[in-house]
Length: 274
Ligand SMILES: NC(=O)c1ccc[n+]([C@@H]2O[C@H](COP(=O)([O-])OP(=O)(O)OC[C@H]3O[C@@H](n4cnc5c(N)ncnc54)[C@H](OP(=O)(O)O)[C@@H]3O)[C@@H](O)[C@H]2O)c1
Image 1: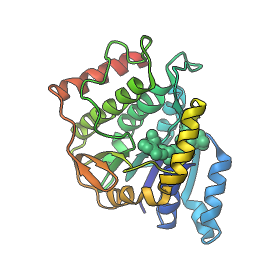
Image 2: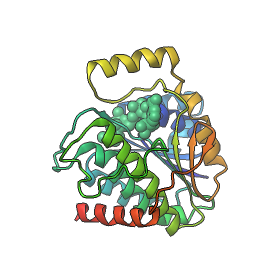
Image 3: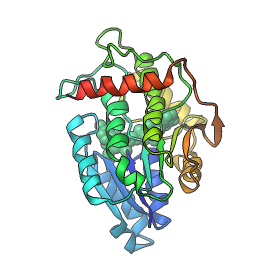
Image 4: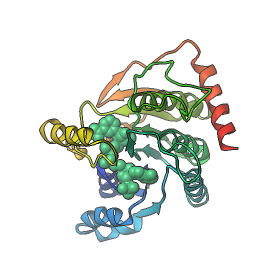
């Protein structure tokens, strides 16, 4: 039986994946903040298959807190000898810079540091799987120079666009670290082809909220439709790094010093975490 770990698995695309893999007979571990949402998604599956509950686990965590990511990773290391697929889909969009109770910048931690802790901390159980795969829902294809290595939490000049570009690039570089440690691993950065009608969890201005609601209703894809390419990637992973928009494979962004930048990023994040 495969074990599939999904951060942000209580809503939107993460929940669509959780439902799919549970129905397919896999063991799922869902990480999010809301147990009520998890119970509701589980109920949609157990109404047809009561035995599914025994294959589903929920871990409550606020992944914008480093302590919560560490706790969950330690739990997964101790409890799961192998992990076949790790899907990173937790999302809470903040238009403005926000400092958490730990004194760290929330978007940087949620969209990158937490993912770094999961990817590096779960290397052993991923290595133990036959065909391991990480799908990181960080939209690929941003600028190669989007990272401010000297100010990762953007204490100066934070904008949503800068913060978003930086985490997307960092998540591409994270793939270099991941597959260097485990050449059998598939590491995919993935984005949908168009807007997905999800919960759009976040603290955004009125205009962004209205635009997302209107565009989502008019043009948005249903989450269960949008995730079909992810299901294909998880079911037939190819070792190495790749980038996808929907089911279309894209060329990886190549900068002048990707390996050095990946190593520099790891050093900078480890320094932050000390
Ligand atoms: N929707 C789109 O059009 C679109 C476009 C491009 C990229 N993406 C990416 O695709 C992924 C999924 O997006 P989505 O729109 O489907 O998400 P969504 O519906 O907004 O759901 C977000 C998920 O993240 C969880 N979450 C939020 N804050 C969290 C926190 N602090 N700690 C732990 N979990 C947290 C939520 O669970 P709780 O409520 O239980 O905390 C929920 O399960 C994201 O990475 C997003 O950036 C989406």
